[in-house]
Length: 314
Length: 314
Image (cartoon, rainbow over all chains, first blue to last red; front, side, top):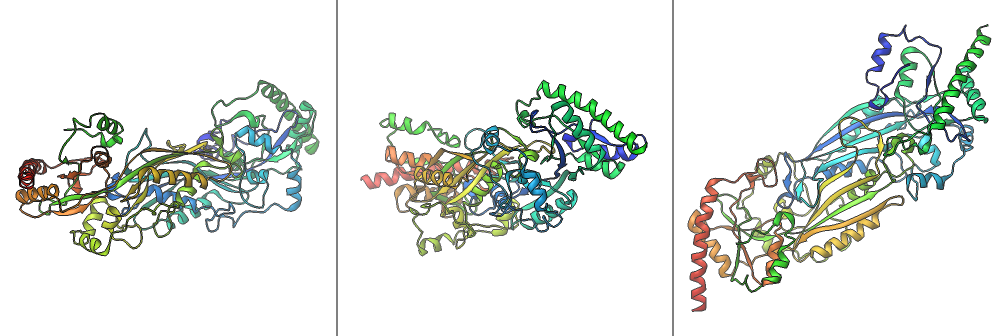
């Protein structure tokens, strides 16, 4: 069992895998860091998006200036950062970084039709996050936008005076954390390179721009016609009395591609979280029933896989 | 002598003036909260810009979300804020808020020619703030951009995760403090109203936008052909051996227009700061020599004004 330090980008895990390849030899890797639709609508995650995470810094004057005495003539790095970030998507919700979509493998109409069968209640989804409208890349459904399409989001932005009340400064610096979710076969480092090159090219005269790749991970797709996936699917069906739906998730688990690349071992994503768990949010939670059903399912998974393997090798 | 609580918007001063109008009766008000070009190039401030300061809040989902599971379909308020702010200026550096320039009184060519005589070393100015390029509204010089033209600057911006390293959230909220420097005869509250109305109209579906007027002040222009201005000009000339240049400053001192409106008294802006004082910045400073020359000048100002007034009143 391995704690994959997933929330901090698994920075030490690749080296650990390389150094202990023989100790880590295995038939398959089971990861439970995913969700299902509901206990009465079970699902198994069959794919994950990748991630490329960048931090940018825009510097204008060498110190915070009085906005009255300098405002109008000296470039404001906060305004510049907004201009630059605003230009990273066009009016159709597409990312404007040259080459960003070059390696994206489009899903064929059959795959998209299969995905569209997944139960989805738009109103309930919107209600769960407290919005009255969804938006994204034109030409794709909500589930496709979070499952099979790459995105670009600001994760954090800051600059200038952020305390109570008014302070009339023209800030020296502005910062943003920007991440891109990736799909097969976009490469995290290549996308970060394209981002950084493009972002620096957007800088107007009068500011200095830095952009740094913080971390990333590749996307992953699990084939459905393998003994590994079948073992998981049957285990869920045995415990929850319904055949699970394979679902492409929008999240990223960088270690999955590390395990495949370094150890040559596929992963099965058999998780028991729910959308209502509020992960990475206040009041994060996990229902006890899902915990107990998860234990039962994983026991059956091991039994199923062992039986199938004996048949195949036997 | 009054401490005008200028740095917090002088929120209590207007009421104090209204309540104590008779006690505050005076011929003229002398304010030393301004700069001069240099001790060997003295100047007297003959005008100030006004200010309208607004805080905005953009809300997307009801909590920070996991950017992988929701990114691409749920509106990101940080990206939206950047889009909205970026659209507040056009490519010529003009503010795009409808009605923003309606009340601006353009300076005539003679006034602009007079201002252009003010000594100005662009390289030195850029060096003092650490930039290699200046930019602003097209069709105006650097000094005009900070003296006689209105502007819009972000004073602060924040939203999402702003700590060390990477956190993959789709933020719930984004904020900005935005101020506009105003010129005669723009009204601070009217400009705030125009801003708020326009900003809210920019909000795309899927976010809620709030905008609040924090504080403001009107611009001010001092006529040069009065005994008050002449007393100041002569006092500077006596102490520094050069006739001072009248200069329109880009800063704002809201109490000047409060004094004029409530008490009916004009102000003279006789200050001794320098551009190198780094006001509102780290290492703010004030040369001792300017302090001592300032004391001498103010003594002479009172003598001059007393003599002129006696002549006028006979």
